[in-house]
Image 1 (tube, rainbow, N blue to C red):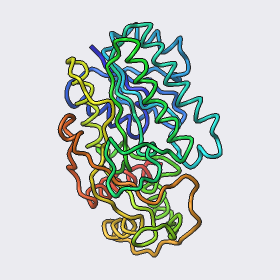
Image 2 (image 1 turned 45 degrees about the horizontal axis):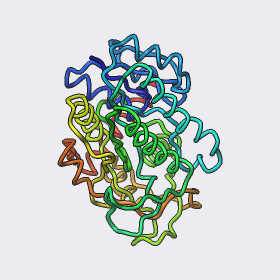
Image 3 (image 1 turned 120 degrees about the vertical axis):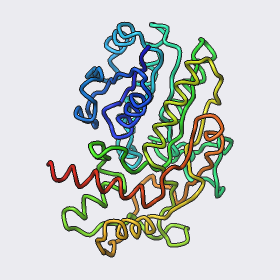
Image 4 (image 1 turned 120 degrees about the horizontal axis):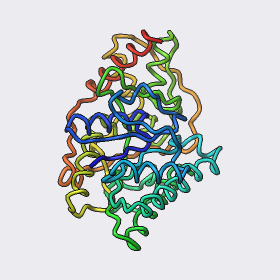
Length: 323
């Protein structure tokens, strides 16, 4: 049987697809290509060009391809922009998820791994968040991810749906030179784009209540993240009971200024970042324990910070060389 990855042409989704294929698991992709890239999907992986809001196409895809379960990554993922575009964010992330769940019910597909987010926590009042930390999202994006978790919970109460939600923290790096982060808002591609173009990278705010005034985040390598998606999918398909939510975090915080130093060190490009205004919706600090995911989902930090930077830099330079 085959696993369907919605949003599988995106940065994280394409790494999840790669993790499935690396383990010999049949996988296919459904993606609107609104932010994904067709070339990120291998030629031998079936691809459906559609939005998850298109219930007819989603239902037909599930029915025609012997789907064992869905890894649902499709959606609008920009927390800062969601403040200006709340209705669009809710449509893509909440209505889209509800539409997918309806199609799964229609076709009796009973397993789903949901792409959630650290944004569900907002700015926690603890140094290390766990799955028991109360959610308090501060952006429409974070709110939609929390609602997505609720949708899965409530659908599971009404049907035989097996599910888990994986809360991502800051996902960086590259697991293959041809796969890289193309987000116009994420820190790594913004900094690397600037360096390739000969511009000085920027820091969005240095007046946060953190040791050096810049945001503190929990950075994890995209390949490590992808491995845990496959582990979750296999567990659900085997009938194992998983927790409803897992944090995929390192347990250690790194500030934006420390990231800048690591990038300068690895790329050997010396620069002094320019400080500009904060972005709306950015919490000061968020760092999480990944202990439960380590217990159940083969979650490990297999890459150092310098590994993350080096892999991202290799992929970014290759993309720039090829236009």
